Image (tube, rainbow, N blue to C red):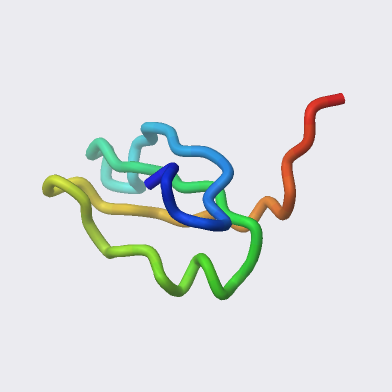
Length: 55
């Protein structure tokens, strides 16, 4: 996922029903709408964070 433009981070998470999932941090709604529903059988949840910059 990190190779996609607008993706700023990727991590693991637990879904509401306690299963493992993938969280993808993206810059905007356009990028969010292009994410797949699953990767490798894991559900994908996108979260809009905007740009992430080091302090």
